[in-house]
Amino acid sequence: MSRIYLDNAATTPLDNVVLDAMMPYLTEHFGNASSIHSFGRASRIAIEKSRKEIAQIMNARPGEIFFTSCGTESTNTVLHSAVRDLGCKHIITSPIEHHATLHTAEFLASLGLCKVSKVNLTQDGHIDYVDLERLLAESNEQTIVTLMHANNEIGNITDIQYVGDLCKKYNALFHSDTVQTIAHYKFDLEKLPVDFLSGSAHKFNGPKGSGILFIRSGIQIKPFIHGGSQERNMRSGTENIANIVGFAKALEIATLHYEEDKVYIQSLKNAMIEQLMAQIPSIQFHGDISDKSLYTVLNACFPLNNKTEMLSINLDVAGIAVSGGSACSSGAQGGSHVIKSVYPHQTSVPIRFSFSKHNTFEEIDLVVKKIVDLLN
Ligand SMILES: Cc1ncc(COP(=O)(O)O)c(C=O)c1O
Image 1 (cartoon, protein in one colour):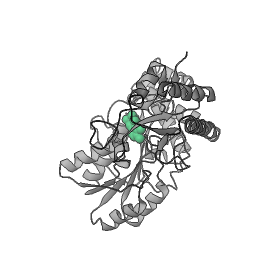
Image 2 (image 1 turned 90 degrees about the vertical axis):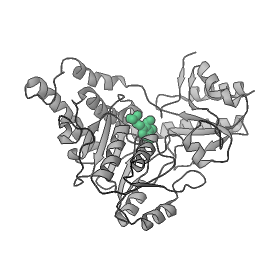
Image 3 (image 1 turned 90 degrees about the horizontal axis):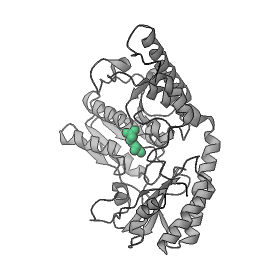
Image 4 (image 1 turned 120 degrees about the horizontal axis):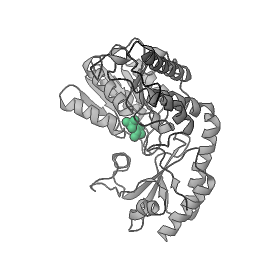
């Protein structure tokens, strides 16, 4: 049996067309973009063309897009600079952010540079916007809010337009980790009230180790990585031209058909929900599975027992890749910080299925059948 990949929120395979676009920059166009000779100029042109294309798709200015090594680096840059350069003494975030955000915020707080507040969540894991407004209203120091657009584990989507408006009302900066949503949703950065965004190409069939950081024009920060002053002195280090070209190409391909892809992938997710509910009456889902949820992510909640505990491993043995599976209960070792934060009293086995346009309905049928076999 050929293998089935339902872990697209972890990473995605490189698209062949993206690889073709990258290949010349791994071979004949190897010049250092800082060199002024023709080899260097070819690389420089490729970088600036990529920047322009990305900016155009996201309706930003080319000067607002900076290339980084990954989403994690982008988020580290934002939080460090906010505290160091922009006078932020208060970071407001949520308990279910990616560790790129949480560990960075906690590190900055451990140095005594700022305090960190975590906004309350609703029962199904959404941001409690009333609590967010309370935190903002009570904050009497310069504040940055960092909230992800969509949660990578449970799929919940935050209304970043609303959060951005709130931040403006209280004169706070706003960063959003959009690693799971760039190339999956349309962005109009001219209108969206965000100051910073983090993105990562490997979540949409681009290369690993290729990130972007959007910085709203007018915001002046110092570099996070010092050295040769690349990226207009915002991010030193010889540019990874192939990965930059790969980011732009992957974004271009993803956005060509994203309305159709979205409808198709959502229907795969719906089929999975329906079949799991029909075949496993005890099944529940983590997070909100309505339209305020990523169409690529479904987090199923299996009651803990000796069969469900081994489910993800046994699926792997059967050639089916999913994520999660470690039992999580209050007090248990390990488990997901996201599930623990939203469901502190629950003992369950979370399994995350994450879909792409390359998955098929036949694969969904096979996976559900295999799960039923393994549980019986
Ligand atoms: C929501 C979210 N933020 C940040 C990251 C980190 O991105 P990268 O792998 O590019 O460092 C990931 C990827 O795992 C993610 O899902």
